[in-house]
Length: 206
Image: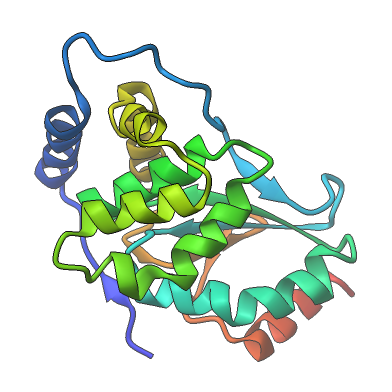
């Protein structure tokens, strides 16, 4: 399966930061709500294997992973204490940034649940004629009021945090496509079926 592969030169990274300032800043906005900050992780903290996933919310391959191999990976390795998975945002466009912000605004306890909803319905909201309105509908179904959704989308601190995650992933691990996986500090293939995960993890879980 062919991955999205997008290179990010410095000017493109700066452009994304400027875009975020334009899209999400607004004078006199309401106080910013609490949101999930830092690394979002599932699995035992003392698991022998740590997988860091870099994903974009508008990436079809990321959605395919979460709707497929991830479920088996979770059941076989995460839920059994063998693997800890850390999810880090790597937005490829402004809509992906907004969707990532929505997941964060759902709160730490509901973060992965919102991720699942967004990836499962990705083809509907990401390809809609008016994607922002479609994303707002997902938010309403997730219990967001219109005011809460609007405040979330204007949260500049949150937008900056997510964009910095992308920049850091590119700088530290040369992440330039999604999904990308870092397994115990080593970057691996982004097109990971469950059989490939079985083979790779077997080398760490001997």
